[in-house]
Amino acid sequence: MDDSNDLNNRLIDAVTQCDADTARNYLAQGADISTKDENGWTPLHLAAGCGHAEIVTLLLQSGAHPNEKAADGSTPLMIAANIGNIDIVSVLLAAGASVYDHDENGGTALLYAANNGHADTVRLLLRSGSTVREKESDGMTALHVAAISGHPETVRILQEARSDIDEEDVYGMTPLLLAAGNGHAHVVELLLNTGSDVHVQDQLGYTALHWAANYGNTDVVKLLLDAGASVDALESDGMTALHLAANAGHADIVRLLLAAGSNANDQDGSGWTALHFAAGNGRTDIARLLMNAGARVQPKGLDGWTALHLAAGNGNAEMMRLLLDSGSNVHDKEGSGCTALHLAADAGHPDIVGMLLEAGADVAEKEGDGMTALHLAAFDGGTETVRLLLAAGSAVDAKGDEGCTPLHFAASEGHVEITGLLLEAGADVHQKDHDDWTPLHFATGYGHADVARRLLDAGASLEEPDKQGETPEMTGGDDPDMAALIAAEKTRRAGAPSLGTSE
Image: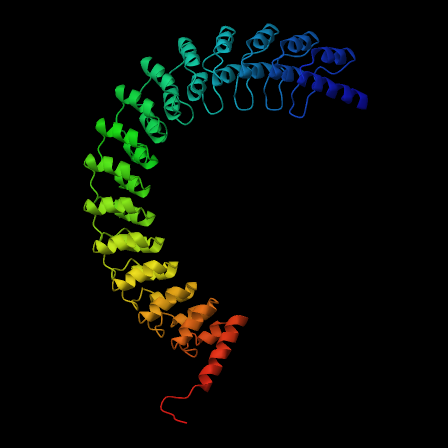
């Protein structure tokens, strides 16, 4: 048994190394012609994959079955067709290889040859009985795979064989849609010239123009527009090709679509215009193109967001300047009540905050949870933003809906420098939230000893109870550093003379 396995393995090695004489020798010694490697490939599969016609002929003459399937269902003919070795394909066909077999993914010899653009092999297979109606498990025909891979000669052969040029796969994709999305202009031109429907839409509602615009295939966009593609077609989310091009940052295509009549103010299903997408991605060049075509800066999406909100949140100063100079309203609120100032402060963009303040943004404005921009900056650790907002007159003790001041937030997050800035601006260390927590409760409760030290130095009380009767000393828990700080502070306070006493 061991000798037999060893001989079989040697046969596989010889075939893999394209050594015909050695393979012939092992066959003469009794090696099993049907032995398989770890992938379920027989010597005939391996010889077909190596492109060695002499060994293929030897194996067939020695009794190899031309239609033996590997573990994945592939046959030697599929393998030879995949690499485009027409000599081996011819030998296998002559030996009775079936053109109708398919592997576990529905692949056939024709589909593999078409996918790799082996035009001569495709012709031979079609003459030998392969049909253009063969489909992979995802519904793609040979024309689909040739189109997606960009093989115009193979596409032409399949068209001559009466392939359905508008056949849809399981996703509703036609050869034209696939070629357009993958930027194969020569294939697109060929399909259009032979009557492919330029208006067809897939299951997502995408037309060929949507796909080409989304992936930046400029030459394809030109071909489609010349063929009458509609710039107004909507995909399932209500987007036009212009929305997609603006979102993906393809300025040349935006320019082409606008010249072809795209409406710069069209809103998608969420109410966003192409300008929203340009602003959100920081593409000032595209924003200028859209504005020159009449795009308005004021439209709000269903979420209440304007282009200015998006630019503020992303911190794009050039885009902000363009939008502000074009009349964007700094007081507009998005759906959660945030102005552009809130968003810039929350995202930590002090340069944008400064621009908005210069444009008249209101520092007292509160978002949906009652927080000002100062609350958000204090929470997120935006030290420079806090400085700007305080200098602009932000109320240092303004309370949100939960009763928290900016100092509560700075204390909860351990922002020592911001805590100092707020205290210097007069923040009240005794303010309580709705649970009667003071900033010191937050500092001790979350283990921020450095912040607790600043608050204690400013007169914060260690004995002030919350609604559960817990004091800041109690919320400090078992933290040894906090315990040492509190003990030292209690000792210091116990030794300090009371007001009005004298020695």
